Amino acid sequence: MAFEVTTALRKMLALKQPIKIIQGSTSSGKTFGIVPILYDKGLETPRIRITVVAETLTAVKEGALDIFINFLIDEGRWNDTNWNASSLIYTLSNGSKIQFKSFDTVGKAKASGKRQILFLNEANHIDYEIADALMIRSEEVWMDFNADMEFWAHTEILPQKEVDFIKLTYKDNEAIPQRIFKDLMLRKAKAEKEEKSGNKGYWWNWWQVYGLGEIGQLQESIFEIWEQVDKKPDRFQQFCYGLDFGFVHPTALCRVWYFEDEIFVEEIIYREGLTSGQLVSLMQSKGIENSIEIIADYARPEMIQDIRNAGYYVLNANKNVKSGLDKLKQKKVFVHSDSSNIIRENKKYRYRKINGVQTEEPLKLFDDAMDAIRYANLWVDSYSSTDIGESFSMDM
Image (cartoon, rainbow, N blue to C red; front, top):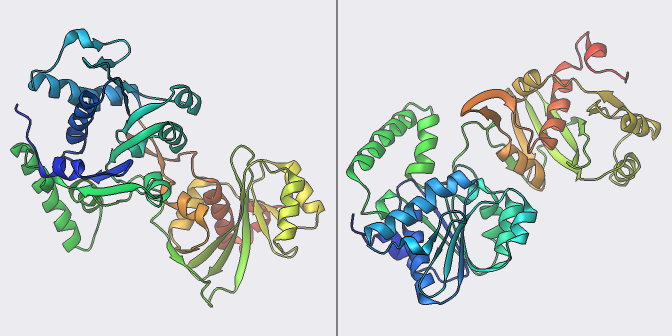
């Protein structure tokens, strides 16, 4: 099939900044446009290195590499002698190399060395630490993605200088196959039906991301996005604390205000590598009250004892995950706008999937503040019951 110059391609060719972020819908021509652009850049400048990266080797082969090979074959430019199938490197006649890789550790990303051009394909699936190690060693960076949720490209890269950002949809791709276009219209109709019924569910969210190229919310997300406010509403007068211990992961101490079926949460401490002594010092410096309940993860009894020895009122949390999540989902939750780590975790906290099937088990990522809030809220819902001594005890 002959290559077609689309609106999407022209928009991407107009990008001039060193970092180019392309957010878009499905079938918008993001990757199909970037791959030929990079090939032409390799032809224009001798002996440059272009690295195309995806989350896994399978994703690289089935995504950008497949598009690259088919593009060259369709254009009559493919040369078997230029291709190294074991290293996944295509060498152009002028010595430029286009390599296709994935990285599973930051160390490997750092060891890969410098390059002139980097392309992060489906960047939202690549860990930020790995992406950052690659970007800092690249003169020019391209990235594309479907924004199923906000991620590091929005929070870490977009605020920087020398960044171009465009959003593409299927309307920018005149080469979209008719069959795919018809399928998209069927999905659009389902989304519109959900919106009219007042039930913005799976198809509405799907259309936001894959039809309109907007930022959506993962369907496996555990909570809705909590409302951010700059100041605690006056109706919230009572509070407790939730505490989740970590070391490699952050220790999270959150203040949880409660009123009827609403809570307001604030981030007090969120730091890795804390010993019990350091944690107590931080609590003292932040004015944590000795008389207020701290509902804590009992997996670290030695740290709980040190905190109690410092005069704090610590109760062992009820760690029933399902009950804790169910109770929290029943609340209207507000979060202080300065609580950046709570906000980040709230957006990324999601259920684990096994072989593509969603389970009821939370993924053990982005859960430190979420666990602390869950402990505190479950105490709030139970503290006046007759069996509080069994659920929230001082015993270790």
